[in-house]
Length: 347
Image (cartoon, rainbow, N blue to C red; front, side, top):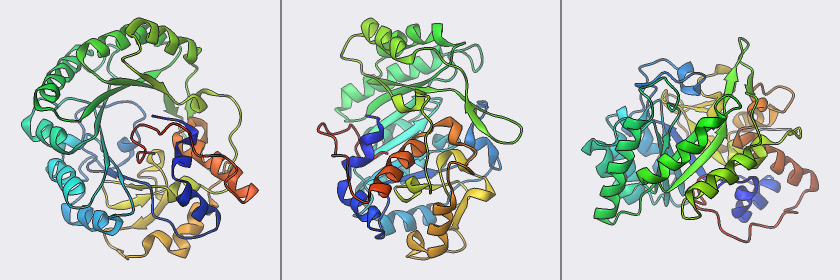
């Protein structure tokens, strides 16, 4: 499901990028709202005003522009299920604008409400529940696991193709809790688990990872405990120590990130930061905004030396390093993956 080579599963688009041709993004990420009923530390959305929400008119304008070209949609927030347009966005993306892979990122607090589970069952490909509350804060993990169990029963009863994923943060301090968490998530009916590193911001906004133990060993232990039928994913490049270098934040051409304020930002981790604002969709709509010369110049101007979130080694940073390597060689020197990735249009 994850890996630096996932972007190579779209070779025609990568080749066009390498030739300097205009391309449509593979994935659209919509932050429906900044509203949230949790206060997780260092969440990128916490930098936005707490009451911002996208309007359906703007969402449909974007979806219509990308129809037939962009096939992946990530719906996030804040907490996206608090948005009054949540269900309608899933419906029109699937039925009207031909999105194939639709993934929702949620804290799982509303999974038992019909306005949430009904559109998930009907239109979403995957719902990823952030189990960041397995520590003492946020009521513990038990209520969320019960909601996952209830949703899995609805999936099985309805025949929906929806998959439930859960994600958990890794760090050295929380390592002991992750093995039992994997077992509990599997028993609750989740389809897969995704580990990613805990990142924190300092006073200057620079993001770094917290120390972590040998994640590969931890993943092996969890796989032994839950069995092969419950996949456990992790993006190994995020845990490596090799420095990632790039000249230009190329991933912004492949993943279009729109915040709840109707603004296009460079990356998920850079949402609501004015210095990484690329385009005002709400007040400056243009059909060709993706290829505006100034927008592309802003993307190209971001490099390892001036991107303060490089230390997080987020997926965009990893894609950038690979794309930069390909750009230097001026051709697609890496072959597309032999085995198709799960949710191929979700980069």
